[in-house]
Image (cartoon, rainbow, N blue to C red):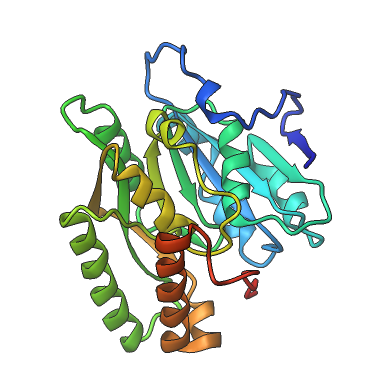
Length: 273
């Protein structure tokens, strides 16, 4: 599978999918973060998303902004070129999984910590978000390899039933990490680069449940902790289209098949736009 790389400003480097070889000998002086956003047909939300990560914010918290696009035919890539430091373009007829998109973004990243953020999600408080991540990354006594975030809905979209759902689901995620199962929603996953490389990144063949699969494998080599202070807001568009019951049913079925058979029951994840 071929990938074209495009940068703003333009800069060409080789795409290296071998995670175990990336940055393994690089000396860590100042902690560098890589914010990786996978996209596919996200022209409606992407510009407002990327505007938040201004050059001033990136300099303040020492992170690069990477957009990994899965073959969008709308204005997604055009928008990304205005804001991103690096853009990875999927150039193949076969539909790319979000797991592959994240992996491709990670393969060009130079950060000590990889922050995977969905295109329809954003931090509730940018300063708190990056300050908490950097504090964790620089704490040599913290043996956790990854962070699971508190997820809620956009203030403009959220309803009372959404608040109830998010409260219960966040408690569920926190409990699973407390008992050592390893869990974190894909809206935002924060992983030490060394741990990401050690487990081989996301399983790019898994269509849905790849987020659970990654944290489940990470939990075998390092702890995953749930951090209530790192809050990420997401669009509730999928819940509006399918309802909570159907969405949770698919989540659950995919989690079970990932654990038992290392593959998801979902063959293609529908893009809700």
